[in-house]
Image (tube, rainbow, N blue to C red; front, side):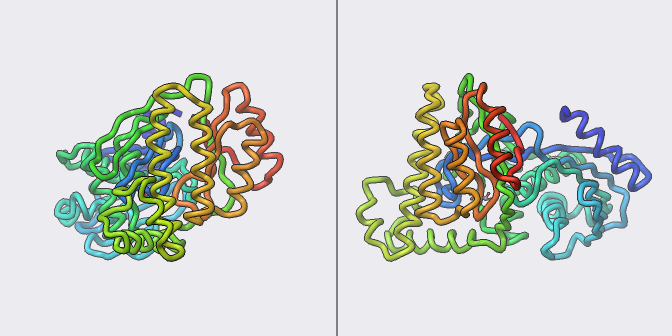
Length: 366
Ligand code: GLA
């Protein structure tokens, strides 16, 4: 389905629900991260790809009571009504409310909104469903109110909504990939400076995204604990951010108490792997990129302890079934695995994995 078709679908769902056509519609993609996990809130590098077909579509009209947002999720078949001065309440509508509050609070106070959502992104698999929802909502607000915001500014605003309003201490990777990324193209981002470059694809190879079937829930998971551990490691090492460190610092990192030593080792290691990953893509070296993915999964598992037995098994099985690299992607504690394989082996790889693991689902090939 093209982006234009998705916008038509969400507009039709809106009209059916509310009995009048929306004024604007917008779409924002999810992402799969190839290398650099939990490096973003440490000022490090990340390498995500915005997904072409998995994302969130939103339609909006200014025809509700002043100060009120009426929301309908056509995907969840659920509705909610929120006041613009409300705080977060732990519901899916928080993300949309937070975004309109962030960029257009005065406008919504004067004329309320009706909002319809449709998503093709599965929740809880680590493909940035919340970031896509935030970026789609901000894009819709920008169109509706003719706001002057660049894609980078929209990503920054969306992250603030997540950090401050929703209360999830994430980095900027997901919002940046969704707002700035070009679907199908890897984006190498320096999360400290927000400088970015697009990385070339590997001709003859594709990335497959496989849901392990173990749903992750980052707000309840160890995500905030990891953020706090990184902060404690910075204090102990006397640095502002862990991305200030390199492999040369590993001896003093290893001397930290458990588990801060391994948490810091992960960040330094995955940060290096991400830089090497960009170089491998630029030189078209798929085998090297695959080896970096394998090394990245190992540090996610052994040092950062964010994998689960199911994603460990799926990543290992992908390598047995023809992939040349595989790792858990996203925030972790379950979710999806991304594998790199030659194009001619992709079909067999997908069949083998879904046959061996009945809970595994192929989500995307990019
Ligand atoms: C989640 C967060 C991101 C990032 C990843 C892990 O997706 O939203 O900011 O920290 O986890 O790399």
